[in-house]
Image (cartoon, rainbow, N blue to C red; front, top):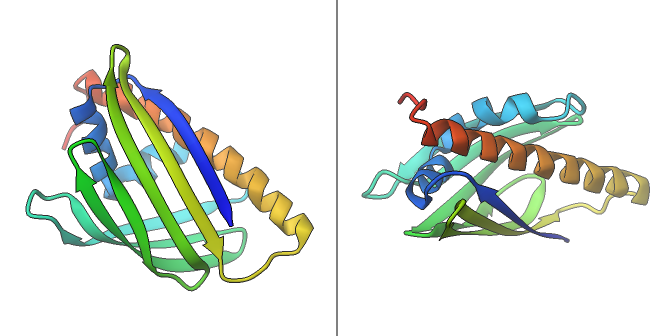
Length: 160
C-alpha cells in the first residue's frame, strides 16, 4: 500500500482553489505540460453524476501509463474546504482514497493532500521501485501545475 501526504501553497483564494479541484474534466489539459515525457500517460475524465451545486460526485477515469490501462470509478464528497474521494471500481486498484483539505492563508490557500493507494497485484521489487519513483515525479509535476493554474485563474485568465 502506498501512502502519501503532501502540502502545497496555491497562490489563489480558497474559492478559486476549490473550483480548480472541482473542474476535474479540464485537469488533464493543464497538468499535461508539466508531466514527465516518460512514461507517457493518457487520461480521459468523465463526470457521471454531479451534486446539486454542480460539483462532480461520481467520476469515471480512463488511464493508460507504462502499458497498463484502467477504467476507475471514484466518488467525491465535497465540503466548503475540500473533498474526500473513494474508489468504487477499478481493474488495477484494490483501494484508493484521498482527503484534500484547503486552508486560507496570507499567500493564498494551503492545500493538504493525504492519499492511500493499493494495487490488486503485487509487483516485483524493481517494478515497485520504478512505480514509486514515477509517483514522486508525477506528484511533483501536479504540484507545479496546480500552482501555475492557481496563478492563472487568480489573474482572471480562466475562460469557461
